[in-house]
Image (tube, rainbow, N blue to C red; front, side, top):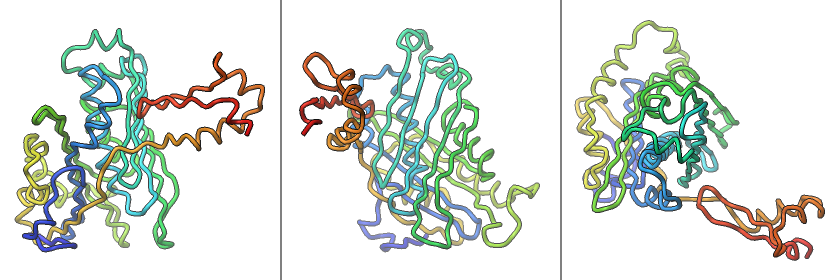
Length: 315
């Protein structure tokens, strides 16, 4: 196994929590990500008191966002994952990633959530919902495609992870396997995720994968990746490098690289909020204000309220 940064036996090469591990298997045309989140997850969940079923759903969503966000290569790139419902208990789920910053929240119908079984299905949570994933690639390399791309697919599968696999199969024609796990260690929530993809060989001038009828290299990797255990993903003391080694140690070459450190982040800047409200006509601002002459703006992500006085907008 090749570490692009430090020797494999070096202490600083070990990756435990709140930092994705990037890996690739050149001989099999594959790339992957592994992640375990603790502090960033606890900070996100602490902003609201969610019912157990909703907390479990948001935990999986944040884990998936960390995995997919770590696919972005360039500084300033953003990943947003949003799920909307038809007639289910969860009305909105949204998470995003930018430069290692994670945030997420869920809106739900309390009465419908109370009627859910202990482990509801994805359909039970959302009904006939849709999954939208947006990649905003802000590449500095003129030879690589940039720009904003969004794919929208039905919420298919038993879990959000399966829905994301379906997204990659339908929107990007990339064979993908994703696994997630969640648990509690010493009273704190812990979650882990694993992703591996078979890359499009057409990017190197060869036949694109989705026009082929068989994928022997992918089926081999998929069989190995499917052996990953939930307790491995959620074990805070297991280095992610060791996890990848357990799965693929027989491969000729596996390249690994640590990703950007993860943390809870929010963009609710009071000065920015004030500047946005200041663009409204004075009459509309007065209509938005309460009896004390303040416009109160709520941030769903961090559960904070920002009062902006009308007087401050006039200065």
